[in-house]
Amino acid sequence: MKEKLHACVIGAGLMGHGIAQVFAQAGHKVTICDPDAAILEVAPQRVAHNLEQMGISPGAVLANIFLTQDLKSAAADADIVIEAIPERLELKQKLFAEIAEYAPEHAILASNTSVIPITSIGELLSDDARARLVGTHWWNPPHLVPLVEVVRTEYTSEAVFESTFQLLLSLGKSPVKVYRDVPGFIGNRLQHAMWREAISLVAQGVCDAETVDTVVKQSFGMRLPFLGPMENADLVGLTLAKQVHQVIFPDLCNDTQPNRLLDQLLEHGHEGMRSGQGLRAWTQEQADEVRKQLALRLIDSVKHPAS
Ligand code: NAI
Image 1 (cartoon, protein in one colour):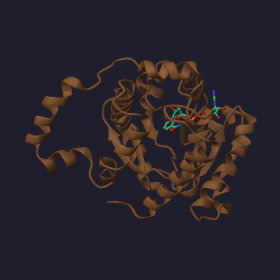
Image 2: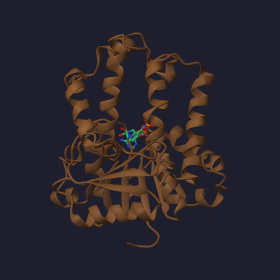
Image 3: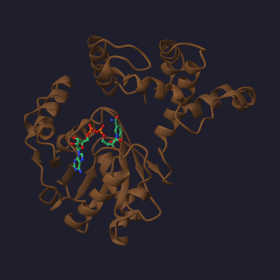
Image 4: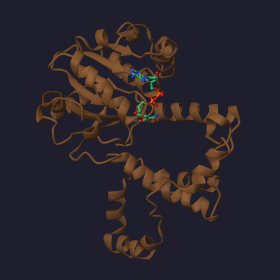
């Protein structure tokens, strides 16, 4: 792969601007494309704010970032195109059909979808383009969270799968390979298995939402950076793991639809921090403080990684 790449990031929102930042920080040229002029315009300011929070002077990084509303010119000489537009299948399918038309024949085509199978996103593509389509699932905030899940479909070529993985390594990320294109990949399946149970505990009146957060943060959440679930199972021993599962598995939530509690909250406009009420109540100051503390703590753990 070339030393200096041209990366094209489609979507300048929460994820797109941060993904672009990572490429620009590594010295690559990045074009960010978004049809919304207002969102596009503030992307460099958001990148500058992130960098300043990290104690990095933004000048050299911002010099690598270019903005456009025009997809055709954005993709025209891209080595990799990363899509970070809203989580709607038909939008992504249509976008990739256009990207495949505009991008060079060697370009890697990557989607940052959270949970949609990459195979479905590539349904409108030719065999050649499908072989270059791969999932790159970054985590918010992408400039700070190290993991990127690299997802292959049955059509993804080995060369694209491997070179995407190597590229992310070279950017300083911690990529992992996901060999089967299952909805939600690895991280979101694990995360939402826990959210399903957490919301169910609140809906059943076992505890309130704040208590769920306290339990996680004051117990196994503290260990997670140092002890993954597989390590933990081996640490306590598989005999105990099996005994625990025999007792609690029959009682765990196994709903196949979102909990009714979410509908009830949403019907009242309780969207979360944005509206001041979700599973918990939020003032603007509290919401801002959560976001600020999250960024500062993540910056600290990037500086002092657990392993
Ligand atoms: P966002 O809403 O902040 O940004 C999406 C951007 O895409 C907007 O600026 C919008 O103007 C733009 N857009 C819409 N249609 C477009 C089109 N046809 N062409 C180009 N740009 C278009 O969304 P966010 O949170 O950045 O999410 C983007 C993707 O990343 C979604 O698939 C999401 O599921 C995924 N993701 C989100 C994470 C999160 O924590 N928010 C984490 C990991 C993945």
